[in-house]
Length: 164
Image (tube, rainbow, N blue to C red; front, side, top):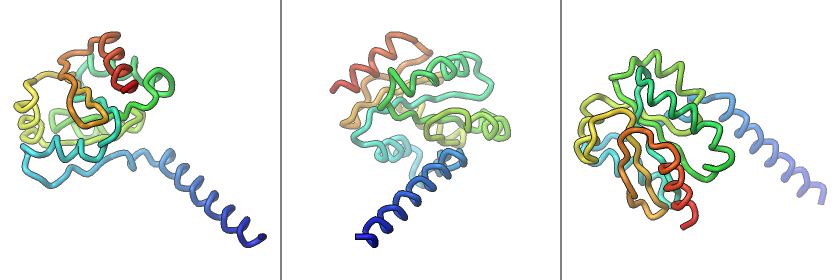
């Protein structure tokens, strides 16, 4: 009996330590860009989130509307948007030093693409602007591509996806 409690206690301590390490190390949220053809990159990234409602946010460090939208959504992640996975994608259009300073404050997973990779994705989704958003349902289908932050209509679309 004591052995069982000891094992459970050790497992709990390891779990807490891993969670604290992730919170203390935001670089664990930086995701390595999959090594696939640019035309398959978006599908490969999204495959990791199957079964989740995802908001893919294409942003840039120098984009004022991007930064305003991020700051408006950040406090909603623990409440209204709880359950939505946030995937942030930027490219070499953003200086890597600026990106390294900004992404730790943004809860979610982060990808830094080459300009060619971003262009291939943008070509596929019909955008060439920052910010651009993709709302992805649990089944992996993209509900909508949104160019520019729409505020409440976009938030309602995410809530609808969470209810499905």
